Length: 126
Image (cartoon, rainbow, N blue to C red; front, top):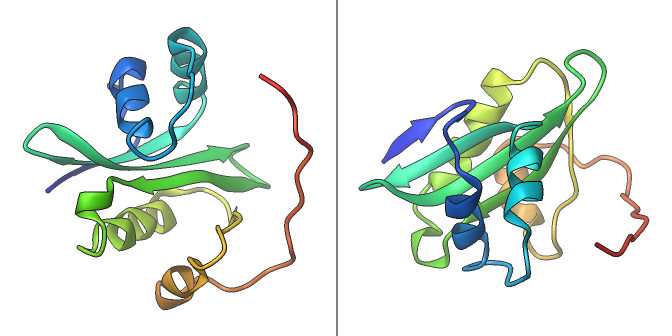
């Protein structure tokens, strides 16, 4: 497994193809590329195939959030998510806040994350 911290070469087409294997949707390539350019992208590749990605949005001083931690289903439970999370901890300039999907909390707790306040969202149509 090859891991890349701050993967500036992460291409939107590759990312959208990867994401659609986990979260099916209609993603705009240009807007995705712009979004990727604004985050710290920590990636995992197996034989040049993107199999995992953790993205961090940070102001560099006060606040950072993990926007998503995604692993292809066939690569889950192999330690890739834990490694990406450790690389995030080691390479972020700020504390990290994030939400967890229901049922995934034990993964984060096993990896040393502390429960914080509940999260909320304001939905917006794309």
